[in-house]
Length: 292
Ligand SMILES: CC(C)(COP(=O)(O)OP(=O)(O)OC[C@H]1O[C@@H](n2cnc3c(N)ncnc32)[C@H](O)[C@@H]1OP(=O)(O)O)[C@@H](O)C(=O)NCCC(=O)NCCSC(=O)C[C@H](O)C(=O)O
Ligand SMILES: [Mg+2]
Image (cartoon, rainbow, N blue to C red; front, side, top):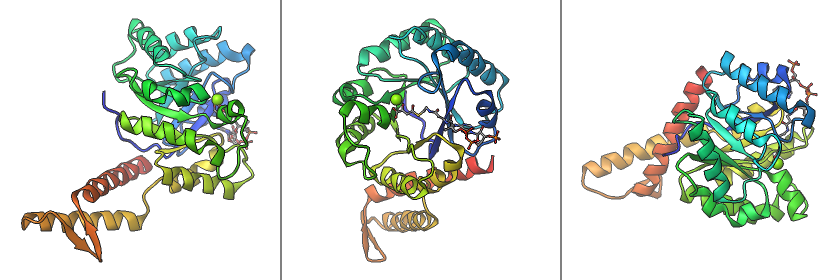
């Protein structure tokens, strides 16, 4: 199953136990929402949170936003019931926490089949433990329902016993391994959260770093960060103009039987045009998303 390329600049977590947040999600300008049953929900609120998420999705109103339900793990008292309930909703994906093996993905896919989950519902994996990093490739290829990875950089820093520095150097290898596995298997991949809500400059820098590394977008914990993520992960006007320019120049050259062209002193080959077309297609989708 090919992953649908869609805007995923900003993907906001919200606790399933927080009815106000679930309501707000219908109007926030985020490309995606993660309705959380795991770490943001206290044990005695898990059942209520599950019911609230199911009811919120049945009521609808989330528009074009991509909806993921983050369940508890299958090795917890709530995981199985979460997956059964999520599989019956209209959500775009079930997001599994702390995945460490392809077997876990296949187990969840089997539950989804048994519960007749809709055909387009994907499985996404939180990548947030050292073993997940080492098994990223087998996880990425585990099942056709797989849609993408979400980096869990807070859990990862805890398990690596590393510092969560602004430049994220101690976890660069991990980020890179997951990016490699995701792209090798055609998956989407979202960067981890920035926990300091008072640190606008640090947040912007982490978005720039994530975008430059190749992430599709950033996971967020507060609505006030949506706009900055949307800007950072969208192509700039100058990039869109350049992309359109080289597409046109290359098409002219191709019509004359040439395989390369020089635009403003830069050599343009087909591979640049492929990237340029992808960028323009994404810009068009973002314009559609922002207009909705
Ligand atoms: C961090 C928060 C607890 C702060 O909440 P609050 O004090 O309510 O913030 P504000 O008063 O500033 O809120 C202003 C309005 O915005 C709404 N709001 C706030 N946060 C959200 C949200 N996440 N989604 C939707 N709406 C939100 C408030 O309701 C206010 O609205 P209004 O009533 O109109 O004024 C809170 O932001 C929060 O709970 N954030 C999410 C935390 C979370 O989900 N954490 C778990 C995910 S991160 C993770 O697990 C990482 C990963 O696994 C890893 O290992 O790295
Ligand atoms: Mg985590």
